[in-house]
Length: 165
Image: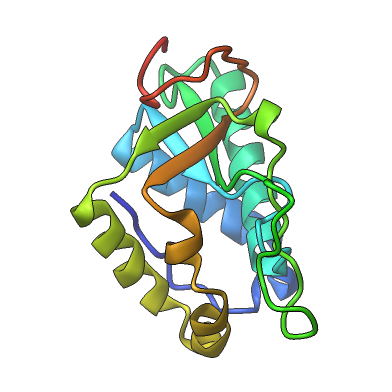
């Protein structure tokens, strides 16, 4: 499941981080998920909202875990593997920030419903539709989801985020 919170698109860097942290904490405490997923430290696109989101979610996760709470059990960073291939046409858009393959801990296949959900979720980025069309992230992601898992290292990589929790 995914929930998009009602914060200003492109405005997280201007917000009081404590408001964001409290909203994330409240949401996690309400759902009591086993796994929380967010952006990796590089934010994939380097977009400041993604960078702020990573920092806020990671800090809240650590705070909750330090309190001895049973949930969440795992923090995962959705990412894309770095193959050194260009992620955009030269001169058009900046190259995406991707994760070195040895840092990826989980790869699992996506079905048609997953791919449809990704396309639908990108519609919430109202001010970035032109960029999304140019980059076509769903095409770049393909049929596999890649995750870094915070504080854990798996070799071989997992094929399911819920394994070995």
